[in-house]
Length: 358
Image 1: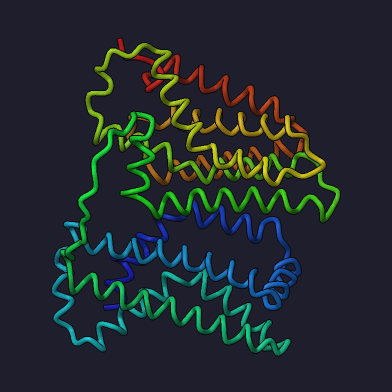
Image 2: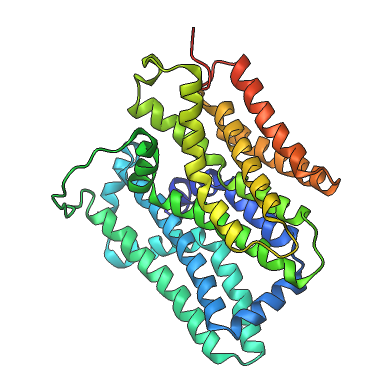
């Protein structure tokens, strides 16, 4: 039975989120040594706010994992699994516990490392807090998933609210917020925390502007799934969009405004936490650079069936190549010109949304 649920829930989850996990591992262990992690853990053990931030991140990851299991239970090809509720509740709970533990291995591993350090230095309040948080996340996840199994069609509370017209610019953001809120939260929170963390690193050492450019590269990669979501949204809900009497520049303006709106929180965070060693003009240049590369990702995948594995491989290769290029002192202005130039070239010579079909 454990092998069955692993093939149904655990392996597909890690396969679907392999790119995000890989970027997280590179960010956590590619740029930080073990001693840096131990120093961060020791700081968290003595700071309730920092420890709470760790637990918040664990909660986001758990929410994404549980949401994936619940979506799998609702998938048509998994309807046979509804018979699983006929199994005795204790046995069913034990199997769900296996699934949840397998899904939360990254959290449990890091929490175990923190517990080891906390016990070693006799930080008993931190031991109690970490143990309670991990136990609570696992318990709530098991109960939540089992409830979804026993209630395959839950009734939802609906409030009668006045309907207001939504401008076209907000079509996709509204869909993203209402239908895929976990993706929205994970994308924006991960990107925002990354950029803020990079900005806060500047006072600790003599960093140059390349560090902020590396943070921008990772923030853009965190948004790589957005272009596929926009494409899927237009294909499913806006079938007549290609037949609308829009000129080329109108289409360009529409998608430019959409991605500028999506990318706008990063500009606010960069301006709010701009290091003293970095000019405001450079921050604006970075934001325009990121916007150009987001549009390039959009033009590459819009309206096409992209193989997820190949897409993740290309993103990983782009990350490595971009990191090497940044370390070779290629300035942000060149990155900006490359992103916008490649967007124009690709949209001009391929049948993509920035070019009206003949």
